[in-house]
Length: 229
Image (cartoon, rainbow, N blue to C red; front, side):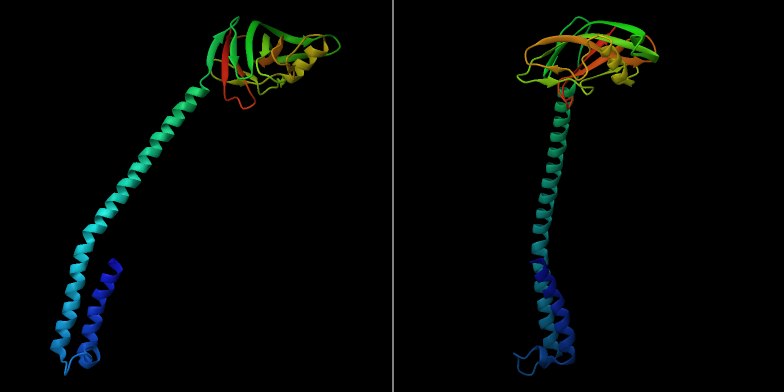
C-alpha cells in the first residue's frame, strides 16, 4: 500500500507538469480544460496521497515495532536457551573427584586406584626403558560394567599436575613392562561384568602430586579424576 501512495504522490507532479504544458492531454474528460483545472486536479491527487500516507504510516510503525520486539524476544530466548544448554553441558562434563582406594564409576567402567609408585626405569636387562624424568606407575583395578566387550586405549586416561599440565600414557614404557612379565592395561580387552587389574604408566618430570583422569567412553563425555598422593 505504501508503494501505491508514493506512486500516487509522484503522479500528481507528473499530472501538474504535463497539464501546465497541454491541459487537454491530462484532462481529456473535461470540456475546455485550462491550467487552473490542472492545478486543482493535481493538488487533489497530491492531497489524497498525503492523507493515505498519514493513515498507513502509524500501521507500518506498529508492525515494525512488533517485528522488532518479536526479534528481540527471539534473540533473548535463544540466549537464555544457549546459556541453559551450556550450564547443562558443564554440569554433565564436570569431573567427579575421588582418591586412592575409592571406587568410581564412569561411563562403561568402574575404577579403583590401589597404589602408586615412582621408578626411574622399567623392564628388565633384555627389554627396558629409562625415563628422562621419572615414571609414575598406577596400580589400577577396573571393571567393565557395560554389556559388551570394551577396549582400553590412551583416550581413556591421562595425568595432570597441580598446574593442569597434561601427561599422556607412556606407550614404550608400558610395552617394556608387559614384555618383562608385568600386567598392564594398555589396549586391554575388558569383558562384560569382569573385574581385572593392571598397571598404567606415565612419564612425569618429578615426584609430586598428580591427578589421574579417567574417561568412561571414547568421547570422554563423562570423566572423573583421582588424586594420586
